Structure formats: C-alpha cells, structure tokens
Length: 492
Image 1 (cartoon, rainbow, N blue to C red):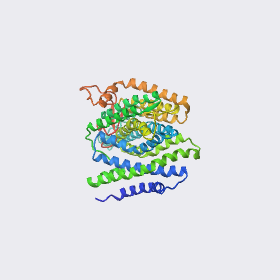
Image 2 (cartoon, helix red, strand yellow; image 1 turned 90 degrees about the vertical axis):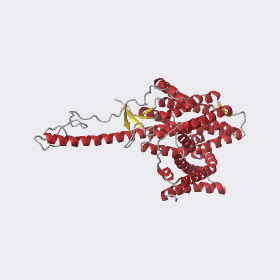
Image 3 (cartoon, one colour; image 1 turned 180 degrees about the vertical axis):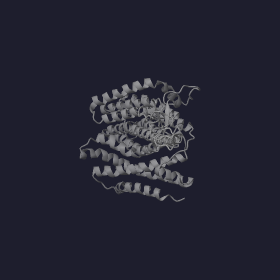
Image 4 (cartoon, rainbow, N blue to C red; image 1 turned 180 degrees about the horizontal axis):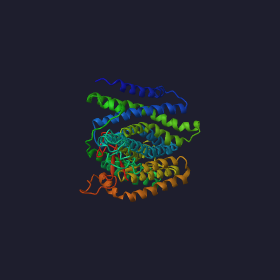
C-alpha cells in the first residue's frame, strides 16, 4: 500500500529541516556556535516530530495505559539524548555537571508549569464553547416551538408573533415555552477538567516520585544506588501500565492518523523506519547541539546555564506539546493531560536515574553525580512544584484556577532570581500543596492502591471529581463517562 502524498510531504519537510545538520556533522564542517545551535536544534525538533508521529501511530497495535506510557517515553527521547550527553561529558569535565541537572529541572518545570496548564485551559475552553453552542441551539429550537405554540393558542409567551387571537413578544424562558423567566447564561465559575479513574495509576506513581525527589537535594548529589531505585520504579510503572485494560478506541490526529490508516504491514514498516531515521538524526545531532548551547552563551550574552535549562527542553518537547494541544482542541483533553503526566513520571524516574550512571560511564568517580548549591535549589523548586501538581490531581479534577496558578508561578520564576527567590517560590509551592493535600486527602489512598496494583474496595465512596456535580460533555458525540473525553464540571 503506497504512502499518502500528504504523509510523504510531511516526512520530506522534516528530512529537509534535518539535512543541513546531517551534512555538517558527516562532513565535519565547523560553523559559528550560534549557527550550529540553530541548525542542530532544528534537526532535533524535526526528529522529535518523526518520533512523536511514529509513537502515536504505534498505539494502533498497542492499546491501553502501556501505550500512553510508551508514547510519553519515546516523545522525550531527544531530551534524554541531550541530558545524558551532559552527564556523560561531566564524567571527564566537571564543568558540565551543572548542565545535566539544568536540562532536567528545566524540562521538568516546563512540562508541569506550562504544558499542564495549557492543555487544561484549552480543554475547558473547548468544552465551554461546545456547551454554549448546544444551549444556544436548544434555546433557538425552544423559542421557535414556543412561537408556533403561542401563535396557535393566541398567547404571547415566546419571542415571535402569533397568527391566532393575540400577537406580541415576550421574555419567557428560552428553554421552556411555558416558562416565565429568561434562561441563565452559562456560569463561568467552578469549571474543571475531570480525569478518568484510571488516571490514579499515574497519579500514584507521580506521588511516590514527588516524595523521593526530596532525597536528591537532601543528599546534595544523585548516587548511583538511588538512580537504580528510580529506574526500578519506572520499570514497575511500565509493568503496572501493561496490566491495565483499556477498551477505548484510539483517536489519531495529523500525520499519526495517516500512518494509522495504513494496512498493518505498511504501518509497521513505516513506524519502524521512522524510529530508525529519527534515532539516527538525534544521535548525530544531540552532541553538537548540546555543545553549541554551551558555547553560544558567550556570543549571545546569555548565561549558558539558562540556554541549557530552557532552550534545549523547549526544542525537544515542542512536538509533545503540539500533539497534546491537538488532542485538547479535539475534545480529548483528559488523554492529553494523562500523556503529559506520564512524561513527568519518566522524567523523574528513568531520566534522573540514568544521569549518575551516564556520569560514571563517562569517567566520573565517587559513585554519584554531584550537585552544587544552585542545582540543589533548582531540585528543591522542581520537587515542590511536582508535589503541588500531585496535590491538584488527587481529586481527579483540574480546576481552571489551579491551571492559572501553576502558569503564574512558572512565569514568576523568570523574574524572581537568586537563591532567596527560588527558596521563597519553593515555600509557596509547598504551602499550596499542603492545603490541597488536606482538601484532597480522600484521593491519596486510592492513588497509592492503584500504583500498588490493589483494587479499590467494593462500595468505596467516590471522592470529589469522580462523578459529583453536573457534567458538561466536551463536544458533540462525547460521553461524560468516556475516560478519554474531557469533562467539565460546573457547580452552582
């Protein structure tokens, strides 16, 4: 079965973007650090798109929570390549130690502080718009029915004119021709993106990792033994995800939809080929891109630490954000958010756990990746932000105000700098997390049970966000009980 022209066009565009980087690397041509940063960074982004499309389409053959976990893992492989290079290089050059931690903390906070709120706000906006459209349609239909009824009976109870014994206009209830009041507009308060109960698996593991995260700043380093523990947690997470059943039909968008529509043999060959091509581009581009980031700082008058912490993760995670946004726009906000939560889990487990091992393989001694004072502060801030994210998720409801709060705290860190500022922000995250943990304490045990593989007791009382309140479906054809469709709850 031949590949669709639209799919070939997208593949060709990605390869064209990556071609200059491959040419420079294979020919050994040296260019200015800033140019190298742009060229190799573009190649990483192009490869990230190829990986994301292949990983998403692979869900056609792998269903359930395991597919989401693997998609989240593959989507951030470019980030792994860059971060592990810094850790490996730090084994022989201590000056690179700070960059390994910088890239990890930056990508982690970018994912939760920007990615999560973006998906939640878009999903809520889509759901509210869809609900208003349905209400408007219902009101118009009811008004027309009322006009016809009143015209026949000669009673002016609806907007319009009658053809019977009386005519005129009225201000009756727009949803009921017999009502005497106007229907209230859609209340903007109390809205939240609701998650399926199956998300407790991810929340439980993220809760465990958020607690383990505080061990790193307490030790002042990332020991190899602790890295092994984190990798074991990731292995347990994959195993637990593989045991979860999910009968929902997958939905694909963009290039992934075109790949998923191929016959099985062509699809598998295409997915395998994309993985190989993307991995080759990343392996050839990761090192020069990482080196160019460090060297470009002086040329641009920007701290190399800042470039490594924010520019590299932005390049490697851009495709993942785009895919999540597309799902949210299509009324699949819950699936988009769960995928980003899974990415957070593999960052805190597999990525962090691999750093000291890469450091040792690069010649590092002492059995740990050392952290200086700046990196300890960054880990504290990242850990407290993660704890706040977990506290928000425990109720299986992600309110709009919480998304705005996370986004605001993320933005503030670029203004508040210095050791004192980072610790103040950490304290704010911690206080908010404590308040939300108390409010959502009913969700702690269910999340931990889900992570441990222990079924929820029969007849257990469902906590807030698992079915209380009036639900607004995310769009036409969606169902509030569909765990993949976002649901917005409106409380009056």
